[in-house]
Image 1: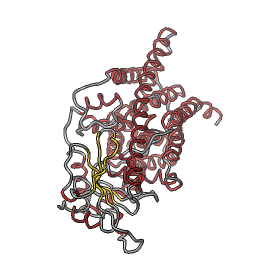
Image 2 (image 1 turned 135 degrees about the vertical axis):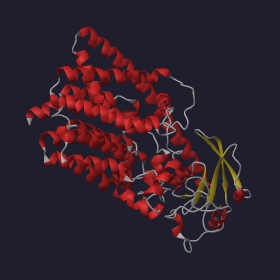
Image 3 (image 1 turned 180 degrees about the horizontal axis):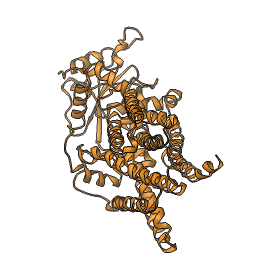
Length: 500
């Protein structure tokens, strides 16, 4: 036990540093993004739940529920997730301690935790980082169960796959595919218990998503079809690889990225990853013990499989999508880096210089992303304060551009008359205005909806990405605490047709 603890000191230091950087750099002053607001609103007592679209799963909502129920302050949620993500990094690396040397795990943890996207999303209510931890634990438990038949490792494998499926069912499908095929190809891994653990974990984790698919969409296939429509029709998009490369300059979502690459230096490390992975696999083949060799090869293969849908099958890019691939590829890359560092002080010094330059670029990107988040939070706060001062208060309804984030800050419902989350007609929105405050948000250059043309125009402060901004506020009759239709607060369980 003492040896095992000593072997985990390096990963523990990396996980602690990762947590402290989040608490110091990302947590202070940052607000909830659009996706975060959707997830958080599902359990928040502060505001009605926002529309929950077909591609989403509720795993991250369950994870953030304790902090959200405790406080509506984003800093509380951010701090909670920062500590939890540091613990998750340590736990997922610790699973690999019997398989790989401590120095490789330490370097792998540092490589992964040193990326701006890993630090930025550590304290965010988004599922991708937790999928990364889940796949790292799943592959480690798979290898340990295959080698020893340990019931604990099998339970860990099923639990990790369950967690991934709970967060993002499609990622769990790719993970099960990679590990299932590996179990069938490698003779020593042809163990029914492994396949049972994979299937059981995936089905248990996806159960809620499957039930919701049946209740809300009429089945799994209609939900998948609807999810594909919302994501821009999934298919063959080889240009997504270039979009992901361009997004490394700090854009959290490229839809689309466009041909320009604003800061090419931010993608330099991408070209080093295949070289480091290849070096690590070459060293493993020549020198490593069979168990370590298998571990590094399976990590590289599974990481590559998990990257496929986001590099080739989706028409837009977000750096967070590749976190599960990055964390697995970090293991063979770390083995390659560690082998190069052991060749002498000259090469070690060169690697140190490259690492320092890499960190400087990563934290420059991180700093810019955090500044944008703080500016966005301040802008939305000003908009919400202005609307509140004009009498838009609960129970109220917000529609239009960026309705989700504004509504959440006001404690209002967010409802739309068009788009993917349309849930009522313009006529219904005008009818609602006779019972409660209603405002429609319109970005400059967009027409005022016909149903709101006679409503009071209220100029608002510009919002990041939308520029000039205004609200059209419905006339406000005297409201009473009785006679309000509280069922209006949540979108209907079925997706209605577009109305007028």
